[in-house]
Length: 403
Image 1: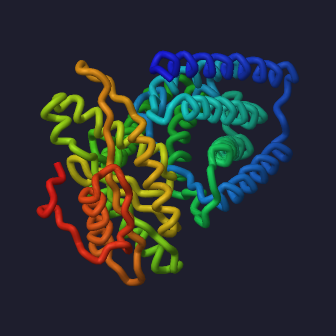
Image 2: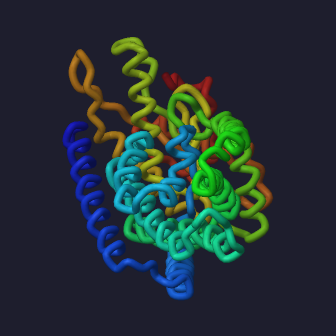
Image 3: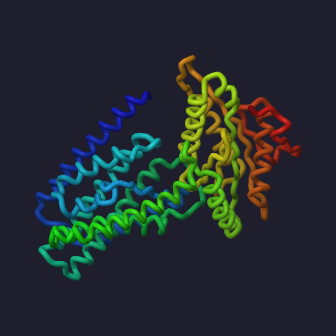
């Protein structure tokens, strides 16, 4: 599918969803009453909890949310208080345009669905106790419940999408990321504070805007720290981010006696690609490999770029057979790629080595064994996956022309 076809598909999907959201919202408005909190809140909690438990059993985790550094992103939920409800789909339609994702139209479609549905529920809860120039204890509780409801609805929808996208069950947990939930609660609260002050007296915004900006700036600093753990070219973890991930996963694996595998991948003949096609095409090849690795691994897996053309995948709760299947799937998908250049179509391949973590083994030792298997793949002709336990001899980089 071409880029323009994907864009058209994305636009049509978002447009259909927005129209549907307007119709559903108007249906709620026509009833002229919000659903009672005593009914909606328990139902949402039950649905999100059951869905989260099912998702956890499938081995899919809630991925870390990225904070959108823009006024629209931070104060979106203020619109659920200040704007008429039929305007919510329009606001929700604008935001995904800023949140472009290499994951494709399905993720953008799901993101819009999540924001629009949860914001509608947010509106229903808040307007069951509307503000009329004051703020009672019951209304404060309604705001807290509204924010919590949004997070639960969001988790419910994300869970459903994860279940539908799941390929095979594995034994992992950690669907509910408390740190991520609390951070999003704080983000939504910023918009709520501004909206509440605007309703009570618009001039109060002159006072509250300063603290809100400081809060946004604090979130920006936190995100910058997270970005420091990412490779700027591919968005994968860099060496610092990988080390933090490995430390956490190794400790968890030791505590639960869980299996863990390491996959080391290397783009074949990158030097020749740079020499024959230019470094711009070389960068395209690296990014293409990174996208395939991201698309074919789980949210709980650690994916990193640790060198010019070298990548690492840490597969938690995965045995050697499962890791070799993942590695070969990545290899196969990359082999099918067709990169357009001025000189025609360029095809690329990767070589990979897979190693299963042994008891009390350090990451350095595990990496050395996976790296040895990688160079065995290089020596055997490239474009293949080798398992570390199949080789006794260690193949060093300086023994082979790896390009």
